[in-house]
Length: 210
Image (cartoon, rainbow, N blue to C red; front, side, top):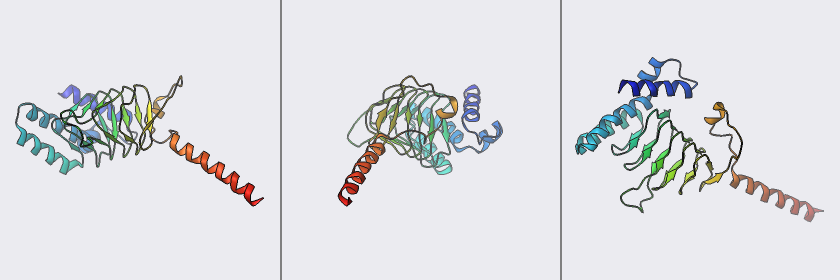
């Protein structure tokens, strides 16, 4: 348990430039508090102590602003940056070495039963305000841009942007560590298409004026 906690603190130190010390992360970061509480709640959930599991979960939600259902499965070294407003559903699964920014929802659509929430692969980044809704998989090493709404499966090693999210391929381009945690420097194909339409309309207006 302590080995996992140390690994998680090191992950925060590596991925959050604002983290000044391991003690600061351990004592003051809500993401650490939420995931440690979730381990206790998940143990109770698996041992059919449902009321106690939900009580632990709700107390943690009140203290941290992060709501993780006791049934969710979370891998190692999860980093939750800021964390306020994060919601992780009952059948959600998160792999190792992932990072979630505030306002992320791993939820359901209300149309499914049984497995209702997404499965997130290893080393996945999900940007601020993104919503991933439904019982599909987001592949390893993928990036979900801020405020995207993901409603279908995302292949491994890809980036999804927009509402609804589209996959933007990054073929043969090596991404350094600094840009791995960059949520905003991602082209949006929907915005590019609208920009193209606006240019065409401007050209037509110029011709009409002439």
